[in-house]
Image (cartoon, rainbow, N blue to C red; front, top):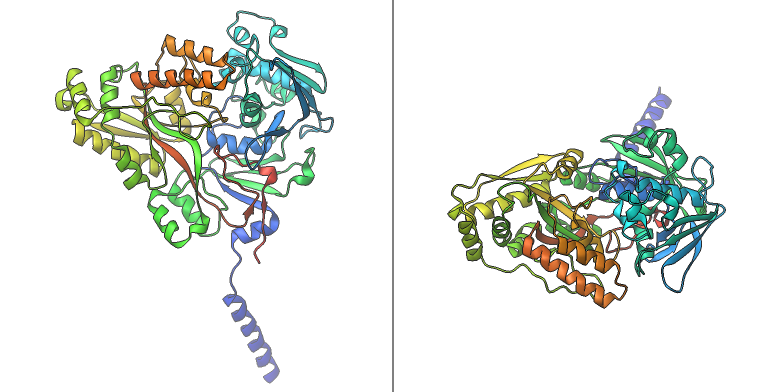
Length: 541
């Protein structure tokens, strides 16, 4: 009896001690297993990187696909990817890339020069309706003529597979930042053309080749699973040519639209990194846990698109009145509080040697005068204007702030319309809005990445606006190799945007997010790109 009691007492004591021991968090377990838990902001539209346009999609795709050139993790400078080396001709027009003989797709097929050639042919197929087709035809010789049907023989385009491991690109004009584009932008990364063709996706989007059971990539990770609105899991690719450098075993991408939910997941040890920080929590983290709060420079702008084909925003006086009635200083100081800066032009600061003088100027009295000149003194007679925004507490807060400013300052009634990401993108593409909350993050480090958006018919224009002089200047800029002369052209393009205001710039972003200290190999970059092959996790001590 005594022995039994002693055994029971020992068991009880062991259970008590075990119950008092600190439980291991999800992040600590993940660190031991080499699994990165990544807050990705929203459910991705697709992972076919020749038809996507968003940042959440980019984050996933950059783990799965590698182009000719990739980004250095510290400064995003170009470094070898599928191409182990390259030469540039003396006239700066011809780039010859030498592909690795050990670069393969996840199905074991070699990655060849023909894969790149046919990938670019696909994105230049008008029926695919890629919004980034211009990323190819703006730069490659004869590509625009092929895209518009002016020539029909693809062999005339400045793209050539010389042999299975040699690929050549002939540019329209010298482009000093061309390698940066190849490294940063997924429009230049290859698709598994044989797989895409098998599922009927050569000339249309939305086919089954991107389903997990069908997907084939060539990057440091491969697609393991995709549960819509729950998470995407990628795992280390054992066939990747540089697999020994890859230290993560998996990445879990979480589509969490609510910034508050994402912050709570981070705080309770479920995420290594959030996509943003709730506005209400910035000061809390500054005070209580500054080591996990990151506020990094970012080449990005927050703005509203104006549908210039729909009244009343077809009147530039209305657009200018709205733009002038925003107190941007108050917005960034009292609402955002994350190091953002007021935007009085479109292109953000931070591009080396580019400092545009074009600037939105005018007073609140000017705004009221313009509104009266348009026939709506004090806002009387003007139908309510609707702001479209994608699901986000932050976007709603900004929209409500502007709604109040426009009501108080101009007497204009504003309504808010919230849509989830995919529906919002469709509404914006189809000009089914009056004002649309928008953001643009640089695709590469050159001001052209912002100013190219608004050319006539541009895939990302989404305003209905067109200006022949703006288009002419853009073409001239592409043909101008000298940076100083090119930047002078950009300055004139900026002024046209400010004069006609198809967009209303609001503020220039910073990158605000929470990052667990266990994440290593992560560096602040102006594009917020962080090549996953270089990231690893430190075990708790």
